[in-house]
Image (cartoon, rainbow, N blue to C red; front, side):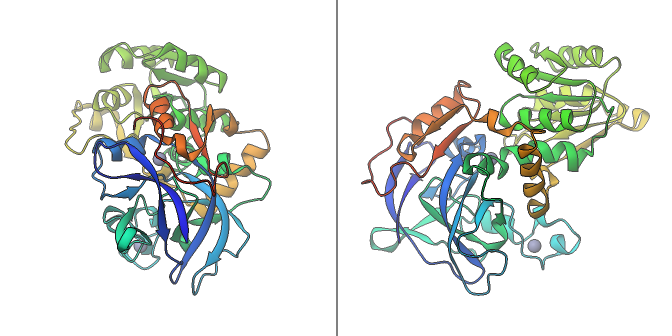
Length: 384
Ligand SMILES: [Zn+2]
Ligand SMILES: [Zn+2]
């Protein structure tokens, strides 16, 4: 079938919306008609080359939609189901899957790097059969996508695609870091460094389980105000140094935090997270640093204070368990996820959406993929 999709031609290029050919779903694959896709910082990492990405590629990895067709052997979903998409599909057979770590699947991660689906091949192509690659096994900046069955998580039909899409990346990354990786409990002291969509999701999750205090940290005063509106009890402005900021967090928490969630990917912020922990406390690192980044920590306090560093990818989550749970709590008013959406744009304006996110003007840009579908393809308006 023909689809409109936003293509990254090469590292550093603008995204261009064009028509592509999308092949039918293979065995254990699903064709999803997309309703919405969030624009995420990882999409910039692909554009900037911070994360090596095989091009040409259709970006986007934070989507939700309706199942339109299923391949052979698919059991998890049926045509017509509403689904949120996970970018950590798993094979169920490899050593990591067998030891209960499906989000670290040894088949899915290399397949992701190769720009294919789980079998390493792509379903996207253009004129004359030239291959176009998938991004994060999904490619949601498009009308539709073919994805692994294990990426599809059925959701209730009364949840909007834009909120469900965000649960597919930013929300799960932040909420899962707090609930799953850290296992924050009522009364734990929590700091969250970096108050974008992921950080605010961590703030919401910490507030929801009764952490106290919940300290928001950011370099922008405006973002701290937003964090306060999401329930942060204290705010600390990044003061330009790891040590100074950690001292302010330690003071605001009366002696250091149990968990410092780091959502920027900057080594100096990671160091501040570590330095702000109390004895037995943990820095929980979510933000993705450049490949050559090195983190220096004072070693003595690790044994003496039993300080820890915990890595967290995709919130150590189980999408099939955690997506529906997160959406239930959203519907109950315990996680105000819809407040993350600051801008809604059609696919053609993906370039502007990326600029709005990059400048910090937008909290979260969501592409409404139901708008303008079927319209003739044209280049994106903004600069990527
Ligand atoms: Zn993302
Ligand atoms: Zn696996």
